[in-house]
Image 1 (cartoon, one colour):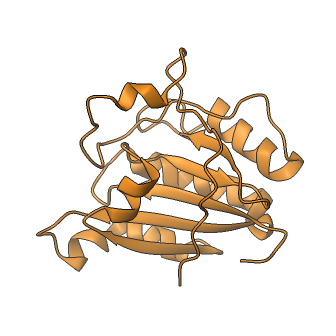
Image 2: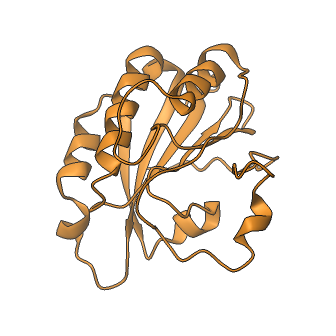
Length: 171
């Protein structure tokens, strides 16, 4: 990734119908900021599932998006590392490698259209600030949530962006 670019990571379940809306919102977002971010879509691949299971229509849609690198995530290793539990979870790390946004970019399950997640993410990428750093995520489960997963949420139920600094470099 270029020095002045942020990193955008979208976590996806390759068979989740709700993720189609996330991919539509991602396409809209990238129309405005494609050159300002390095974008990855991580497709979780549970043990026992084939590459064909992962490389289905959502994978092909990610491949077709300019500037997007789809990544297979065998056994959900990276997904677990980043603490993503729901398909459609988006993380945006600013050019300083600080986590700026953690949340969803759809307004509800399978719904495309104007929403607070898309607005906040665009603000973070374009302006370096936004009125929120998290939104709810709507989609299928990527992994089982541990019993204490609630500790990573603020009182409004939003994932905390905190000070996570790991922004990976994928091939």
